[in-house]
Image 1: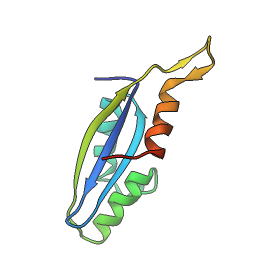
Image 2 (image 1 turned 180 degrees about the horizontal axis):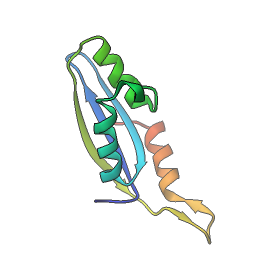
Image 3 (image 1 turned 30 degrees about the vertical axis):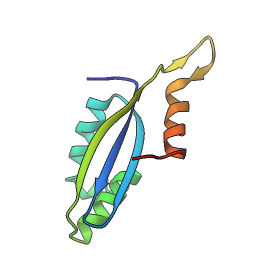
Length: 97
């Protein structure tokens, strides 16, 4: 039920491991991800979905592991900054598993 978090999806196959990071309400997005993994018409909505559907098209087995990387403050009207956005960009730029 965590809100304002940076979370990571780790997609592992027999030979590779890819990571995807994003920021939002985790419970809501997790539920949406699980649904879109089953509906081919959603295959191009995110980079994660493109990758998952590519694996499915190739009939490769995979496993998705989720983890919360950091909780952050959302946009602050006084400072005009969004720490959540800054942290998401940081994790995307400096990916670590």
